[in-house]
Every structure is written in C-alpha cells, then in structure tokens.
Image (cartoon, rainbow, N blue to C red; front, side, top):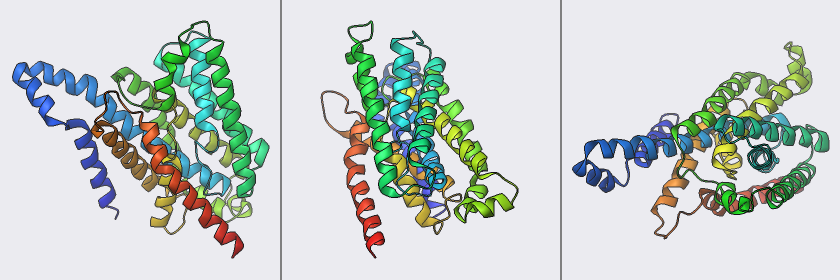
Length: 318
C-alpha cells in the first residue's frame, strides 16, 4: 500500500499532463514548439495545481482533525476555505490586489481568521455537533460576506468574473499563479509534517504532550497557522474545492491504525490523487463548457460525508 499510492499518484499525474495525447501529437506535427508551449504553458500549471492543491488539502485536513481531535474537522467544514475565498475577493475587488502573491496572502489571512474563529466558537475538543454547527456558522457567514462583497464591488461584472473561480478549477492558470499558490503551501505542508510526532502525542492527551516539553496551545496554534497558509494560498488561485480535505485524512488514518500525525503524509498523497482524478473526470465529460472541479468533488464527497456522519452516530449510540 505504501508503494501503491505514490505509484498511482505518479500515473495519474502523468495521465493528467499528457492526455489527450492526440492534441499534443497534432500540435507537434504542425510545429514542435507549439506542442511544447501547449504542454508547459497550459497543461503543466493545471497538473501542478491539481496535485499540489489536493496534497495541501490532505495534509492540512489531517492536521486540523488531529488538532480538534475530530474526524469531521476539515478545511471546508471548518470554514477555512470559505474564509480564504472571502479574503481573496476583498483583496481583488476592494483593495485592488491583482497579483497572485497579494491574493495568496489575502487568502491565507482569511483562512487563518476562520480557523481561529472556530477555536473561539467551538473550543479545541468540541463535540461533533458543536464543531459542525460552529463550522457551518463560519462557512455561512463567510459565504454571505463574499456575496455581499461581490454585490457591492465597484466593478458591475464582479459576480460574473468570480463565478467560475468560486466554484473551483484549474483552467487557464499560469505558472506564475501556480508558483504563488504552491510555494507557500508547500512550505506550510512541510512544517505541518514536522508536527506529526507531536500531534500523535497530543492525541494521547494534553498532559502527555506537556510532559514532552511542548505547549499544547502553541502546538494547536502552529497547526492552525500552517494549515491556513496551505489552504489559503491554494484557494486564492483555484477557488474553494470541498470534501478532499475531509475524505483524504479519513482514508489515510485507516492505513496507519488511527495515528493522526502519521496520517498526514498518506493524506497528502491521497488528496493529490483524488484531486487529480476529479480533474481528469472534468476533462473527460463531453460538455460545451468546462465543468468546475469543485462540482465533481462535491458530488462524490457528499455521500462520503453522510456515511461518515452516520458511522459516528452509530458509534455514539453504541
């Protein structure tokens, strides 16, 4: 299994980059430089973002679930993705920050505020119902604020410009945008992975992590900050894409016998594979326009989320 997931991810990434091969072959027959431009300027950023965004959601979802000690804590359910979208919209349409780096910083700030608001509302070890209600409240508030910011924006076309982006997707992204999203997200993901052993100790109790010489509060704060950076940077470029950050950690924990810290690296690989596969489905659907990848992940993720809630309810009753 440890070899199958990275190998499967590599094959998915290669397929995502090279398929459909016929278009590249036709472009190469016309002009080899045209095929190279198509591969590097159009397909490579899309593949990098699909893999990188999925990995960022996987590792940050696993870290957030470990910090809250709850399998339903994820970037989308906690409000982090909605907060990042709000930050990017305000920066773009109200502050005039059009550069990828400026939008990434705004997305990080929005995601961070949402996660810390969740801590204030629900507490770190909240019950499932409390966490869901607090996350739902933050998500709804951020969504309403995003709609209001777009409705009152100086540009009358703000809603139309932002619609596809808000639904989530990787079409027409440049290498510069990919770098602005993935460079800070990659650094944050590596810092989260370094916290893995400490998060495993935190799962045993705050007394255990305190006995190791580390403050539980500082550990949770660092986890939320790094998760906000990883999620916010990607959302600012690709929009909010749900359920990958929920499903990947749950599947990863089953591989590592429930250890939340050890689950982060497998969760990153699973998240990257899920996101890449979802975007391959988008490209395979024969429509006149591009289907947002966020729609595909929502359609596939909603049944998974319901099954997870039902399973948690059965455990509670038992």
